[in-house]
Amino acid sequence: MKKMLTYVLFSIAGLGLMALAAIPGKPGGQGQSQPSTQWDIHDLNRPLPPVVDPGPAGPPVPPPSDAVVLFDGKDLSQWTDGKGEPAKWKVESGYMEVVAKTGSIQTRKGFGDCQLHIEWAVPLAAEGESQERGNSGVFLMNTYEVQVLDSYENTTYADGMTAAVYGQYPPLVNACRKPGEWQTYDIIFYRPLFDTDGKVTRPARMTVFHNGILVHDNVTLSGPTAHKARPPYKVHEDKLPLSLQDHGNPVRYRNIWIREL
Image (cartoon, rainbow, N blue to C red; front, side, top):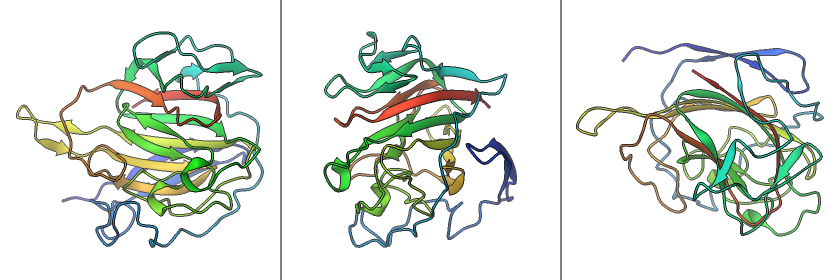
């Protein structure tokens, strides 16, 4: 199989530079075709990635001219709850905040291959431990999760920490800022492709930058992300909503935009 070289051009929050990532799809590490089978899903004995200081947070990254702005800090008109009703999260001071027990929210419009920029902050008061601290999630196509969590001096299982492709890939490094500080995800996502018989002809792939630092390098997803499970792919539409998870913690989001690829 020929190696693929994808050049991804990002505007990185607070750094004032453009990051150019070459993604060769090499086996055995990032770019690998399947999650590691060396460790059980959510194995607490799995080594945690090294901690990297990403530097201070910068101002919101302005969307490029061809981006679809999903949240500009004013209202939730682009979002609904899981039943298609108006989203019930709080909006104030330029951000939205999870309101516990109101449910996850999703975009009115569906997306497939995309470049996503999203900024988020966990509560300043670091309450709870492990998965109970600042938990939420960004779900591409309402199916493939990049974990949101407070992993600043908070230990949890490696494949469920901040920026993990949940249950499949820990991040290369822990690039978390302190609670209350704004953080960014820049995600390149390619949806899975299926033939007419429902067989996967191209699995989903993902590249993720956390606070401007590469944490997933063109990893291949084994299927939908899930808790304590690794389900196989199921045929789905070419475009599905982006969703944000209500996990009971008042996580904040701002400046969400997406570019269709």
